[in-house]
Amino acid sequence: MKTNRNFKIFLRLMKAQTFNYITDPINIILGFVLTTVTMLCWLAFKPHDAESGLLADSFVLASAIGISAIRNSQYNLNLTLADWRETRFIRNLLTTPVSKKVLYASILCFNWIVNILVTIILISLAMLFSSQRKVISNVQWTPFLIGFILNIFLSNVIALFLSTTFKNKEYVFIISLLSYFGPMYLLGLGIPWNVVGQIPAINILTYIAPHRYTLHLMQAAWVGNASNMSFPGVESSSWLGVHGFGYGGNGWWLPALIACIFIFIFAFAFYYRLKSNYQFGTRKYSKFKGVKKHANNIELIKRTNSIEELKILVEIAGLDYKTKKVKKKKPSKKRGDK
Image (cartoon, rainbow, N blue to C red):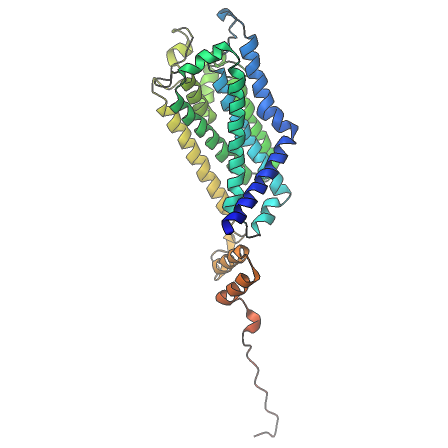
């Protein structure tokens, strides 16, 4: 019975998120249209002479998939959390018997579904070009899927960390947009990496960007170079020809490991912020006697599903103060009484 109720709530939350997503033009434009149009422009109108320096990377489709995932996994997740926090939807929902796991599972599940659908659409459009049909035969699917999954996980934990760190949603959106437009133009889609990566200062500076490692893993795997992370189609004497994607000749395990470290750091930071922000507002009083007991009682009351359960909880916890015996004062003896 409880499982069916949670499933119905889960579906309703998914429906609400779907409505919010498709009715927000910015979500559609930034999360799908911008990356799709950029990818199609490179595939359809790219120059045919290498001397122009503006040839699209052979992994442009992988770049589009990864960067659209950053937008949907980070900015869109932050947008949902900010809107629901501003309208007190999450707070009101958590005062009901609805499981927190159901709430957060619906948010993350919707986020993953959007990313998978956008990825399918991008691949379908790219397959209209013969050049991309040839490239896809060289894809190393295992490291590519690992990079794809790590990219979404990394974006999700960064979004959760930002949403619990900054109360002002404008700061969250600004950082999320920088995390989107930075990779968009500096990591291989807006401007090809065979151009940006040849500039040593920018190449080295982007090592501080967490998404560099997941995107490079996806890009190298897309062209079949995940084993040594070498860069395809450039002169051997150039910066990219010598350094490749920049992992010292090591395979895809190195960017995957670095991405996992970033995920762990942001996940731990999110947990710490969550614990310090949402501890029933009693953290500074935690040393006082009885605070933990009362906080636990509050949580148990929130989880009750009926009046009967609430009455039982009141009896067990000893909260029914009205039924407790009150000591009666002994009547004072009057003068002259024995």
